[in-house]
Every structure is written in C-alpha cells, then in structure tokens.
Length: 158
Image (cartoon, rainbow, N blue to C red; front, side, top):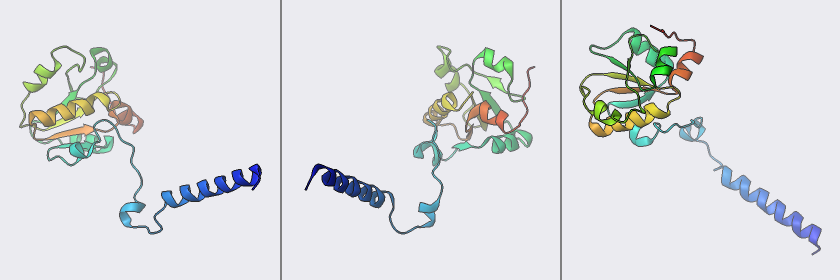
C-alpha cells in the first residue's frame, strides 16, 4: 500500500468512526431535545433542587409583574451597574463586597427571591450559595440583565 492509499484509508476510517460515534441510530424524545447552553448556575444539582431554579427573563418578568407575597428582587451587581439600570423594586447586594457572604446569610431564607446579575455568572454563584444556606425559593434569571434587556423588558434608573 502506498502512502496516498494509506492516508486515504485512515481518513475514511476516521470519518466512519466519527459518524458512528455521533449518532446512535435511534432517536428518542430525550435525544431529539435541543442541547441547552449552560451557565455556572445551570448544573443538575441547582436545576433540580427544590426552591432554587434557573428561569428565563420572561418568566422572571412574570414573577415581578405578579409577585408572590414578600418577593425580594435581588441584584448582585455593583453599584455602578445598578445605577445604569435595574429591575424595578430591586435591592442591590454587591457580589464583590468583602462581606457579601455574611450579608447574604443574614437574608430571610423563607421569602421568595428573584435573583439576577449582569450575565448570569455572579447570580449563578449566588444561587449556589443560597442553596447551601437553605433558601427555600430562589428564581435565578438565566442570562441576567443582559437577557432581560434583549427580551425588551424594562429597567429603571431611580
């Protein structure tokens, strides 16, 4: 076998291996479901945990528009980010402050929270902390305020 033929056979075998590895031959409803992108908060433990969940911006807006009793809208961005625009009624708790964990632990664990940051990274980390602290109802906005704004939802600068 010459070098050209050997390379051709190896390439063909590689292509066949990739094709068979990428498909199972049968499609179940689970296999047909689209693959979701993940954020740090989008781990199975967090998604499946009672009380702590990742939600869309539109679901977050629905919660804010018809809030459950005692809802706290928690923005974990910096003061500068908060003043540029935030969800109406939000309370700011700066994720980067040295006492953030202590202040978070002092919050009422039995009231509902609508949680967000800029893109979902800080709120994802905060949601995980809230889960560990035993918070009973936390809805983390997937994609944060960036997702909120891209959906056309309003913010305030008060």
